[in-house]
Image (cartoon, rainbow, N blue to C red; front, side):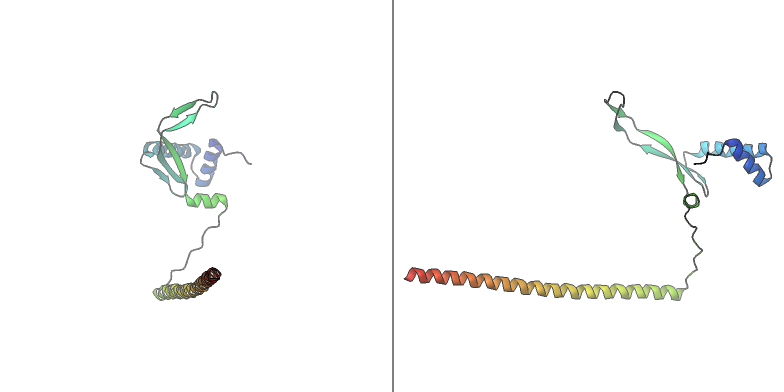
Length: 165
């Protein structure tokens, strides 16, 4: 893994790319940092890079690693930097999205009607399938109950016949 760029390396690189003097670039960077410190409470955004935000943390129970005793950690406010999606995609290697074509009203209408038709078709097929399964289960239960009642009646008849003798 490569080493991180130092402040002097960053300033000289910015000076080369912008054509400004190194002192001027340092002044701009320092001013940007001071502005970030001042406006962090409201949320300071650097477009394309990220946003500084304050986040409140609740009080919680923790453990002292040396002694193992439980301790109460008080509530506090911490400063976080949320990385912008553009920065994540650029650094993590996500391919930038291509510009999408604007769809015309006719195309949009076709798409929505096609979706609605597909939903209706799936609902109809689901209803038909539910009816078929309901019929099958009704037939099976009817057969089972008929068999049970037939067994019961034959048992009763045999018992009565045995008592008559």
